[in-house]
Image (cartoon, rainbow, N blue to C red; front, top):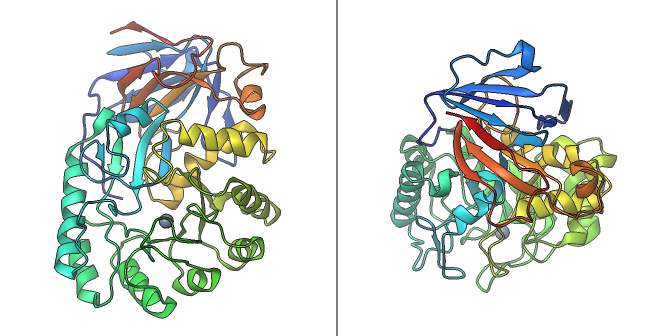
Length: 397
Ligand SMILES: [Zn+2]
C-alpha cells in the first residue's frame, strides 16, 4: 500500500532494556532480543545490546524491562474528515486510539460522511479527497489508509482504473452501497483487484438503518480480499455460515470489536482448527453506533487471549503482523527494514497477572507507557489505558 506521508524521525533511535520483545510474527512471536535501533523511520537492527550498534543515537529510550510490540493496526475504521467523526459527533478520536497503541488504521469506507455522494463521479471524488487528506494529515501521528469508495451499480472497469491511477488502494465495504448481488459484486471486486485495489465485504446483518444483510453465499460469490467483520457488524450470521466462510474461503477473516463477541470466538476457534490462524486479522469497526473505542484493539487481544485460549503473544500477532501481511503494510513486524512503529507496555498496576502476558491471558488490559510511530515518539504514558506498572523513559537525546 502506498506510504502515508508523515514525520518520520530522521535521527537514530535506540531502545534498550526491552524485557520482552513481541515480534508480531506468528511463526516466532517472541524474540530473544533486548535492543532495537531505527533510523529514518525504519528498523535497522534487532538483537542483544552487545550486538546492536548504539552509537550516534539522537534519542535513547530505556524500556526498563517492559514489553515492546509492533504498533497495533486497526483493520476496520470508518473515518470521515480529519480527527472528527459525525457518527457520535466526536473530535479527537484518532488521537485517542493512538493512546490505545494503534499506529495504523485502514478505512473500510468513509460511509459516515454526511450527504455521502452515491453517484459515480461523486463517490470517486470523495474517495480521492479522503485518500489525499488522510495521506497528508496524521492525527496523533497515526497512519490512516483511507479513500475507500463503496461500489454502486453502474460502475464500469474504467472507473476502477481511474481510481487506481488517482491513488485509491482500497474499496469500502462491499454491500454498503446499492450492489447487493454476488454476481455484480464479484465483477467489480475483480476489476478492483486487476488495478491493485484491495476489497473488503460487509458480513452479516445490517449495521445501521439503510444497510442490509450480506449472507455467506454473497460473501463467497463476491470473493473480496477481506471477509470484513466475519463476526457481524454487529449482527452475526448463524454459526454454520461463519464456519462455512472459514472453511470454504481462503480470504482474510476479520474479527471486530463492534461485532458479536461469541461469533468472534467461534471464528477464531474455527480458524485454529483449520490451522489457518494466519488469516485472522483484527479491527474495531468504529466509529459506529456503539461508539468509538480507543482501547478496542487491546480489548480484542485480551478477549481472544482470555476467552479464546490463545497465548497473549499470539493474539498480538493477529493485530500486527497478520494484518500487515493481509493489508500489504510495511509495519506490524519487528525486523530490520520494517516501519519503526512500536508500543511499549507493561502489566497494569495491581493486575492479578504474574506478568504482562499472564495479565492479558487473565483478561486484563495492559498499560501503555510509550507509543512510537516511524521512529518518532508520539506519546509517553497513555492517557487512556490503566497505568503501566513500570514506565519506559527517554534517557538521552
Ligand atoms: Zn460493515
